[in-house]
Length: 539
Image 1 (cartoon, rainbow, N blue to C red):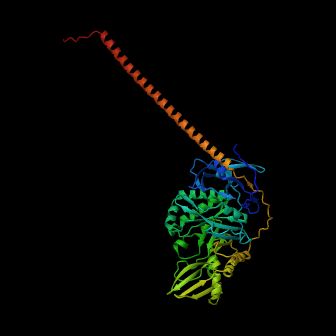
Image 2: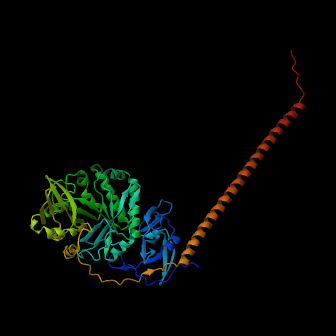
């Protein structure tokens, strides 16, 4: 007999913080094979069966009820597989109807069944500022933050997991539900970043094709519910200025669709410059009316490809752009971007070439070139001019001291928080410094710690049980194929008999028609033989 439920084991499981950040929910894990054998979603596996894609039906909203339309073309979602002691599971606690299963729980027992095609909109609680936020472009490279960046408000991590594609949303092969679980366990909200590839021609194409906008929105909502995201970050850069109005409408459309499902959104913008594609293209005021947060990327004061050396984010430049943007974006929506990096400028013959220098790699310069480094109180940063054989290396350092001045602007200007680019460029001392900064109006989260409920983990199937499931699946497929074959055979037979009957009926009709003609002809001949011939007499 195949087992449909199992006792909970003592296997440790990650504890998930709910969207509100105050309550804690447990995982409900079922073996991957058991999920695949139960779900009513179409799915496909990669060559090595290490990754699975499910196709989630189009979502239709009626009030607070979500209906999945199985007749509509489904959007692809990478199945969230979590691993425990080498075994693969699917957590069926999150948005189970979307992944095609539901469960009932009786104590430590779980029974899995195919899901209904309706569910309720999730009641996600909006994040509270001032926000402490970090972008993570390489989420599989470093360990997750073990603690919050700051407790003044909510914390957000933004892994770079999505790109716009001409046919829909493209997800990273590295998207990982265990990453989400780890951050949620540490009190973070996960808001993945979506990029337009920084390609103006490609972006023009998708902005002109409003039909694909719905596919983006649908897939973002599906991913959010299945993986536990409660927000997104739009990083749309290098957009042709002629597409300014379309970009504004596109961002507004995505934000509006996400809001219907209680999912928040944010958009990144550069500081002010005369660049059509990199600055003038942004309608910052309209963005602020659509999204929940506008992130001012207050760095790259001197661009990477500049041939003139200069700071990445001097204090006067950062402050000036923040104050100007407050004329278009309300303070409670404006997030200040800060850099966890600077640049070494290799200057030779009056021409400079920039090279990125992460904060975590700066200490050797302070050790080896202390006599070349001075503090610039106007720019609020250390500066170094180091002679080289070909010229001079110039550095305007971004370190804990310079970052501290910029972080103080969050409180002074009553901003919505800060967002750092990027995770992995900082060191432990930077995190410690940020944790000690007073960001202002936020109130530390003093809610009592809620004891985590006991995780529900269905015991991994034994080899015999797994084979039995596979055998059952094969027998089911074989039976379905046989039934389909018999149905096709019966339909073919019925069609043949119908055709035969129609041919017979047609033949009989032809014969009857011929008989009628013959009978009419015979009657005519009989009449002719009875009537005497009439002779015509000439007068």
